Image 1 (tube, rainbow, N blue to C red):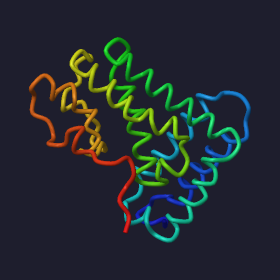
Image 2 (spheres, rainbow, N blue to C red):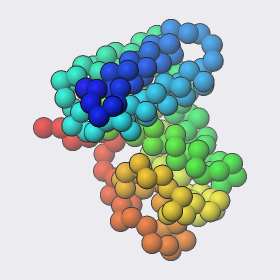
Image 3 (cartoon, one colour):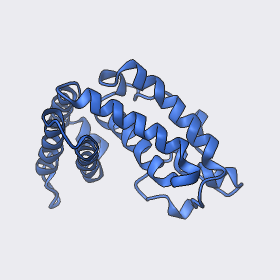
Amino acid sequence: MSADSGRDIPGLAQRALDAFAESSERGRDRDALMDTAFARLFDLYRATTRAERSSPAGQNFNATLAGLLVSGNNPDRLSLYVVRSQTAAENGRHEGYRPACWRRSMLQVLGDEFVPLRDFLRPVDLDAIPRIDDAMEAVAGDASPATVEAVPAWVPETHWWWWEPARQRGEEAPGHTRTDSGTLDPVTD
């Protein structure tokens, strides 16, 4: 990853690594630390292309990130993040569907664009991902109005959960559905 076009990619990458390192080391503020780490990773995701994330510098970043994800407090914090994601999904019709979509997308972005989920999530957490999807699909019909226009522009069409309420109401939505999303991890050669 390089710093071109006025983007401070190395700085964004370092901030993401620092946030995951802090989450690994600190004993308090579980939710805030992991939320901050995901926010920093999201900043990096938005500022880079898939080619940049696959470059040698991107691969070095991913290797460092992979080590941080399995170190210190991060395995427990990631488990808690998954549990809170499932709770948000299950409560989507009552407390807002959008927070559940954000949490689910952060997990997907981490797994698709940086480090495969199977490389750092515990088996019980990997098993929870389909339950999160089940809950999102189940509550989408009753979720507060989430229109196609309300979906952020950065959301890949494969993140079907963002469009599910509109789809269940019969509105036009991107062609991807849950069954189109495939496996949790990217296909590699």
